[in-house]
Length: 393
Image (cartoon, rainbow, N blue to C red):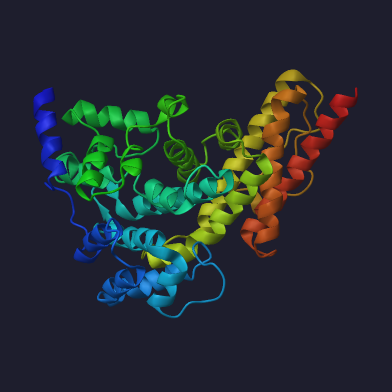
């Protein structure tokens, strides 16, 4: 597709072509939020005109994510407590989700898409809060909408036309390449146009073209960096084979967040996701997702063990590490005891062990998640003992 045609289509997108409209309430909220004469009570009165939205905003205001103290029972109370900015972001998040369908259509699963979007939003909010690099609530909305161009792109170019098109979000660069190869544009271009049409803040729109190596450039804003970090986290939720420890390393390098802080944040996100999903009318299986993350942590331990084995022939068994299939019959004898160069494995090992420890303490002790976390934790402890023995030799 020629560049001029692509430009014309993007301009049509910015004028609303193919972009799902937000509710009239959501549009008015954006206008009111930019009007210095609008009051928070006027905004609450507007939301009350749509009872379903009012109930869900109130629920979100009382959730562990956005709640700040005792329970509020009316929108006016929520508005006074939360303020114009946060109330607008909460109502926009709900309205935006409602603009799209749920379920699966051909190769695209809307439910999975919004679930990953919610995980990104919660992680971005936590990263912004702990790093103090950006407003947490705006970070939530920016990350929630980071891939919003994908369902629009699907509706424009894929639905009913290319049923065999691979819509996998990971690796992102490969998906964007496939999209450009097919149509001359990609869903991040589409997302930028959609956010402009919806009159989102420029700071959020600016996150659309930033991903991969571009996020490491010095001029990149804190919000763009936080959104990219949240995207890397959502990859772990999507695919257990993704390197579990790379997220911790990147968070420390780019946001100066210690492993302890990131471990606590991961556990917090999983504790928040179910309640927040209710307000967005999403079906999230918290335990299944946690088990997937633990499988990723387990694979990280396997890689650590393999790295240790390449540096030493000192082993004490050949039983494989635990997995979903072996969880029910795992005991202490099913562990490798291998060695490796200390500086290559210390940080990854600490990341896995610390996360497993915090997770085991935060869930019901007899749950499958807790059992799996404890198996991982025991293996991490054993590898730490061997590492300590190596360092003392």
